[in-house]
Length: 394
Ligand SMILES: [Ca+2]
Ligand SMILES: [Ca+2]
Ligand SMILES: [Ca+2]
Ligand SMILES: [Ca+2]
Image (cartoon, rainbow, N blue to C red; front, side, top):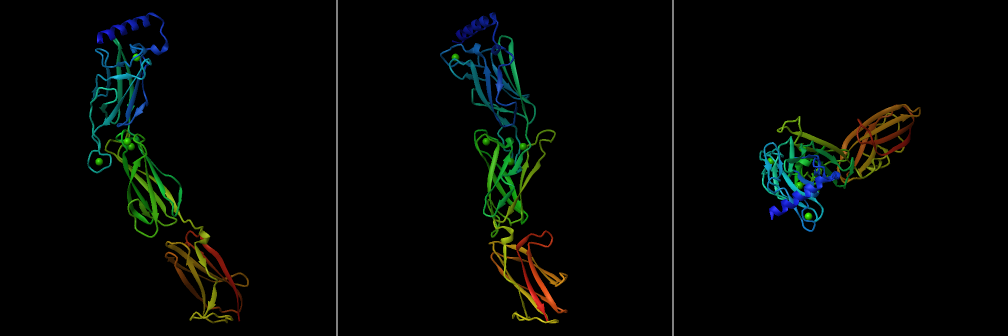
């Protein structure tokens, strides 16, 4: 049978070479792979265009295992030979196969244990495994005809991982998506892999460790969904974060390309922000101010040298903590500020708070009392509309 096939092949080859042959018979370019650069654990799809090896137009032929016409798939240190490729259709003359690269022993998540299973085994067309190094290449050779060996090489390299949040800003109540792209962590191209990612916030620097799951068996793209809490501690995929916090994602890449060393690692980081779903100006409500005595009894006709309390009530309209700076400013009829003071503090979820500040007028006349609620004195954002009230001091 083998002899028959070979003799038919020889005949075809001779007759083909006897004529001026079309380009696709060019023996120096018929081996292809699906990529030019592979990572250490990729699946490699191989195609060889060899119409002259289509011995039977009505049946599926194969190449690579016939004596002295072996296909060899190899690196500097490891080799699969012979390796069979099979015809895609009975009369295509196109032969394909797959090989899974298995890398070398290496700890990819820094837990002290290697995470790969390097092995070199298989005879094709789809059952091959081949150990490869971080750098260097992979070569496929095919002894196409007596003394004519075709070779094709692809490169192997690790990649620097990327990390991103799905959005630049998240609102309270939304889920955040963290995305890590590192083809080197697609350790098994036929199964869903996962990577670890650290998530932390300004309010919880310790943060959480989250598993990001590969989106498909062979994608090298990993995702995790994160929720935010303002009322409970961080746990699982839930991170404690307050509005205004930066949210951080950090991936430790232990598979770095040259010139990094194989043992090097690199923290790859990204940042997003959590914002309140309540517009800033509505976050705190602010009741009308009034002037009272030290017992809180309103004074309708204040007089000079009387110690007055400027009283108001503020309320947090959010179900989480809010820091504030409450500013009280008194201006005389010329617009000159005669008293300026502030109170800084924090409101818990939906908390109401009565605030009072004393003022003792020393000159008769008309005054305007104004109050403002900001988030802080340093980086002020108004959390409530300004309140003002006119008084005549007698
Ligand atoms: Ca055929
Ligand atoms: Ca490990
Ligand atoms: Ca995978
Ligand atoms: Ca990597």
